[in-house]
Length: 419
Image (cartoon, rainbow, N blue to C red; front, side, top):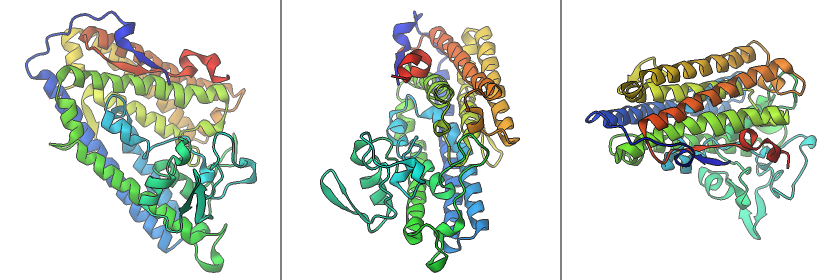
């Protein structure tokens, strides 16, 4: 992705004189929301862990559906945390093993023949480690007889330095629960049978014991990773301390997160690129057909940090001094504009979400020539871009330096996408 450093793109005014302690209060709210949001992500992942364990012990369709439902529920709080990824080095360095995408699923398990095999870009695209307890990596023999969290994280994830060799995180678990979505632009998600985890003669597609080991290890690792990140935002945690250490840098972190998720990541890499390529594999959650929720809750996450308010999974609200307060104190009209743009984005993303829940799945929207689908997705893209323009004005009004908003070729240099 391109990185648009706003300090070179805008003419800044001198930093405003924040009311005594006000910026610190804003940063405290921002950190409190992060702590609560990651704790909710952990709690829902632990529920997923319980459901996965039940599936492995008793691989019925009922237990598989329960594990799928738990995975989908776990995405709701997590997607709201992604606004913390950009600008917070601790989060960005960690995120790649938790929410990495896209992935070459053939690294993990069996895939349809249409998937193909190894490529020049990825020798391990069809490794199928579940079926192969030994393999060679960079000239070394790898013992994969025990599929453990340490093995997944330390040896298989990003094997051979290839980013699409995603072996851990939400999307690896998603693939293991749903399997490939072979419907193209047609209706339906992945259809992995529960018997893929059955023992003995009831096992389908072979290696059911190792598949269960992988699913359990990946889920356990996800829980451990979220537990670690939630701890980083508690009092005395490194992520909270880093944000709180410098008022100007902390406010810049908030704006970098809002702008980068809105523009380069969501509008560009996750939405506009898919429309350009008309490729259902460009869905963020392509196995589960959950992409509409991914986008929606990303939008909610941006709104949360601006308004300084987060609704937890138990219905309680974490709120306090907000960036909106700072903006309103300097330019009330701009605060109104920012709030209006955020609401408009949620409305556009809500239209995508509602259409998908009514049967017009996101991969169907991506089909070439589907004008209704393109209109829905581009409504979200344009709303994200529009709110980014207001974020840029907030940066200028607050006079905060070193706000780096990530870009995307799909938005900034479309011809490069096809080169």
